[in-house]
Each structure stands twice: as structure tokens, then as C-alpha cells.
Image 1 (cartoon, rainbow, N blue to C red):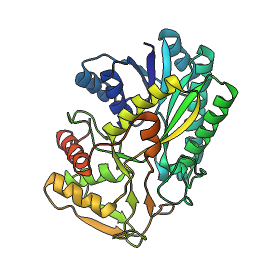
Image 2 (tube, rainbow, N blue to C red):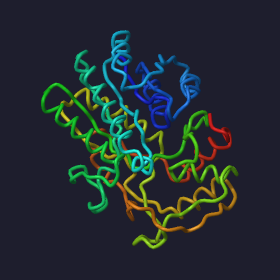
Image 3 (cartoon, rainbow, N blue to C red):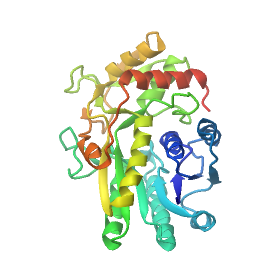
Image 4 (spheres, rainbow, N blue to C red):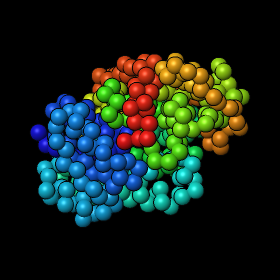
Length: 336
């Protein structure tokens, strides 16, 4: 069995996916520059799985570093998480986002071509559906974006589409994630962002544990049941399992395939706050503030293609997502 190179494997989704690959019997190599993660998570993946990981502290844009990995290891496939991912920051630093996310992917594909490595699973995003598609989102809808981060996902999907067209043996699955939350049952790994979190769940967690004062709810005048934004939240372990299925699919199917990974139903910001209150056992202070630019009212998946092609579906409930997130927060109030 060839080895899987996981870029960004020390991060939130990457670390949980490494666990699922290792537990499914796949050997894993991790490349990460630790710009938004910690090496401690690699040690904890090993603790959970009782299996070793070859870890390379390197940047995916460093061609020599990536070539060295391919020279030293027999890489059979690449699962690509590495990238900058904060929407607001991407608006302030568009060049950094385009340079890092697109150039990094470009280097990976170039080295893969050099070594005859033909399987690629890409961490894409529901942001590629842009502002104008009706929910639920279906994979054949036109893609667009509202910010540089989103456009890096749109562009990388296009690069993969073109690369697959040029090399009939290449296979790429672009997994369009919705909103991953939760943590591993052990509480050893979870979402541990640097600085103040950009995403709702780690922010709620830090309010629950007393590190932040209150939750800001951006807008309560959307055309949704309670006026707050609706999103499709998926347990990170369900999401991680989807990558194992995607790699098995890529084994058998050539070409470019985009696939949604979501639960197929939306949860509002207020519903999420109340579910988390239940998990942590106390009320959470929040305030309603104005809408954020570029936010849409509702985003949720049509998840039927994942069921059809990958035989995958999300199983974990919102209660479990919040309970697992709270468990991780309590065990790691200051992060990893």
C-alpha cells in the first residue's frame, strides 16, 4: 500500500483525517509549516492511533522540500488541506492568499507529475457556490466567490479540472466542505486556532470556557426562521471519514469529481448557541450586531452525490458535535 501525503495534516481537519486514514490501515506522511497549527497535534494523533507518522516541517511552496519528501517516501496519493483560510484576512491580504494557496497547490501538482503520482483529494469549500445559487447547493451549479479565499478554491478546482483533462490517468476529488465542527471523542485533538477564532464554534467554545466575553451574532434580519444565518454544520470526524471514501473512489475513477460533504440541513446561529448551552450546562452571553459584508442568509448541502458515489453520509448529531467540542475545550482551555 502506497503512502498518503497529507498537507496541513497538523491542522483541525487534517489531524482528524490522519486519524481516520491510520485507523483504516493507510500509512500517513504529514507536511505542515505549522503557521496555524502545532506539532503537538501530530504527537496526539500518534497517541490516539498508536501508529507513527513521518512529519516534515516544511512549506508546500518550497519545491525542494516537497521533492525531498517524494524522493524519500513512496507517495501514492496526496490529500491536500494546507492553505490560508480566513475570509476576512483574505480581503486584507489578497496577494498572500493567492500566492500561498494557488502557488502551493501548483508546486504539489508539479512534483506529483514529476513522480507519476496520480491521485489527489482536495480540501475545497462550499464558498465556491458564491452568492447567487439557491440552496441546497448541488455540485453542477456554477461556481464563483465573494472573497479572495473563496476564489483560491474556485481557481484550484479549475486547475484540477484542466490537469485531469490533460492527463487522462489523473484523478482528483474536490470535497466541498460545509461547516466542520466538533472534535475527536478522546478530546486529544480539536479546533485550536491561533488568536481570536474566525469561526463560530471555537468562538462559542472560548466564551463557554471564559476566555472571551460574549458571542457576536452578525445580523438577525435574514430571511431565515429566526433571522440569523443558517449553515450546514458537520462533525469533523464524519468529514474526515469522507476523505477515506474519496481516496477509495479516486482509486477506481479517473478525472475530476467535485463532491459536497455536509449533513444536508441547516442550523441557525441562535440554534447553535442554544445547543452549545445544553452541552456546557450554562447560558452564553451574546449580542446581535450588524451583518458582515459577503455573508449570505443560508448555506446547506445537497449531500446525495456523496451517498451515491462514496457511500458516505454524515451520522453525528448537533448535540454530539457540541458535546465533543465542549469536551475538547474543557481538556484544552489554552489549546494544544
